[in-house]
Image 1: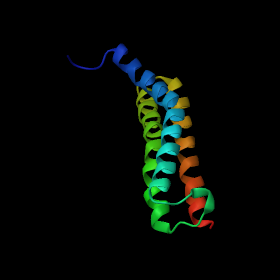
Image 2 (image 1 turned 60 degrees about the horizontal axis):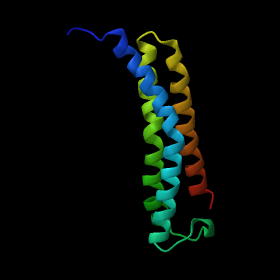
Image 3 (image 1 turned 180 degrees about the horizontal axis):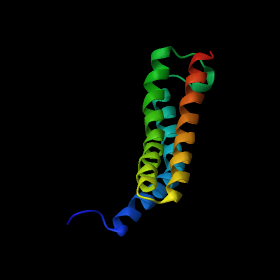
Amino acid sequence: MGGQSSGGQRTNLSRAWVAVALIPVGFVLAFAVGQGLYAVLGYKPEDATEPLWVALVAGVPAIVLFLVPCGAAVWYGNRARAEGHRAGLLPLVLGAVLGLWMLVTNTVSLFAR
């Protein structure tokens, strides 16, 4: 039962790519949750008239939903890379870049009112 077999090592690479494939799903879910929370709270995000607390209540869960698959891609891509699979670098970079993109665009829109 010692170490992982090469099949187990391949699992990290596979999981990294599954996480990358789930990033668009995370985006759609994040969009739906963010819009839904704005609507439940009685605001429209396109009006940009909501107080900061509403933007945070609607935005934080949406960002977290998007970051879950991004973080998984980084995590499993890094583990695959550490196991010697150089191909793990691509899902790692994709997850990191897209996650940072989401954080930066939301932070800028929050403070650029």
